[in-house]
Length: 430
Image 1: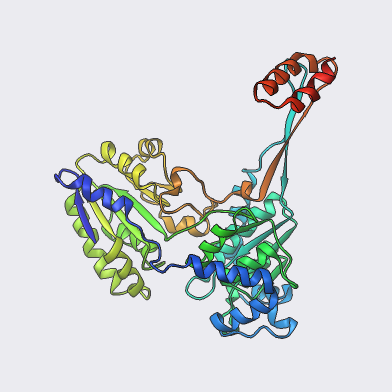
Image 2: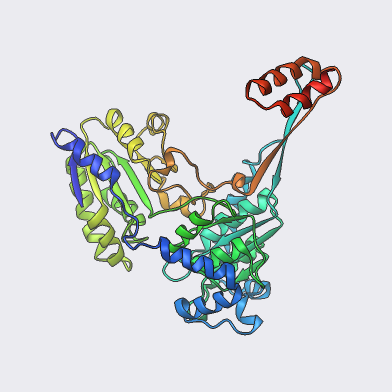
């Protein structure tokens, strides 16, 4: 864990190093992923059988080995305890309500020249949702991906998920039932992304692929962008907490560890104007790490990538630093978070006040938890219904409106050296 002080002469150099540090996997996965995708494209289901056996120790033989049925998802839902079932339903309801408010409106109007203009929003036909297995088997991620797609109007929702040794997470299956998923295939990794993009004998291709995964899944999505749409190329999780000394250090320590426990490459950063408070948070982290079931992973993350930054003036300095970090999650644990919210331009999602831990946003708040990482919040946004929709513009001219703008189009076509363009306009003018 690093400790930086803004008044230190070397602060700019040290902070720039923190901002620009790469936390992605050191393993060169691009070549391996290219090979896997080519195999899936050329060999289809046979390649999926081979990779599932190799990577998941699972044999895809009979038809029942390939799919998890809606009946199995319903059974998993029915067998849940009341508390968990109610928690999933609450999360689903809040996610659905938040994303319904994102639905865009069609436009259709006539301008001053008499030209009819507008746009129609339509959903994609099919969406593929990647749901991790192994360490990251999260029903919340399924809800966060499937519900916006349904709200957008997508008719076919396809989930792919690895099932190591045939094991599946009943909470994930219950979430799939709540979200109304149409198909669940027992394949994972880069090969599953290839199957969704290219299609195989069994798995029909989709139009958009979303959902988190490991470095191989992220690289597969990156390579296949253009064949299909994707949500984003996601990297390790991040949290930035901006906190004054009035906070309970135990709370802030827990908030920082909530992301550190995801992965050894996750990053947790505290910016505070109280050096003593920062030291208390560090002590609380050490204590909590000794008690966490995920302590080994969280400690690796905190030791390698964690940081405490002490500034002289929190409101004057923290937003500028936050904008350079462009973190996935930013907590504003201060008396009045509003000035900070207005000054922080680059963030995946912002959590306002001392009573709004990031972990609430991961589950039941409503906004999507699929967010840009690796400073990509400078130019991209979290998952929304718009990731499952596309806009088609339209225009219409008549004998009255065409002469008002047609000659200008012909002039520009001639200037660009495109006489056929010009002629298609000029024939109608004449």
